[in-house]
Image (cartoon, rainbow, N blue to C red):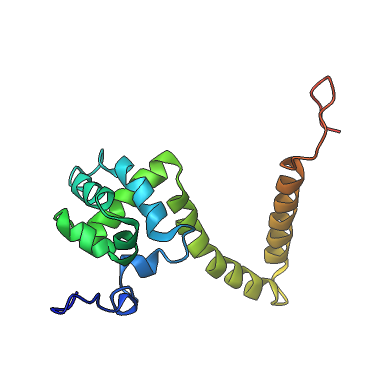
Length: 155
């Protein structure tokens, strides 16, 4: 915030190298991150101060505050804050775990496809096809429109 009371550019404060930038591909962004933060108190008690600071903010203030600001209020480095929340999310099966997996997935797929396109990439092509089959099977078995017979078997 400037001396005149204007909020400094959020874009500048949320650029590369910040937690807000790192969480931009997480559905819900920093709001989803802060929903998981109370679970991290068990792993890092200082996170409680950041959670309390977040709860006291208005919706407008929540949009403009950075996660680095909250971490600093709790006496945490951004890495400690991120690590505690990611650990809690991982142990409780939260959405941040999906973010970690999703962030690595495009690179893994890109490499697998490159290797599969080579003349000796037979095994890579087989793995890609196996992966696609498992995705299709998962979609088929999780369809809400499937009927269940009296014996419990899917039709």
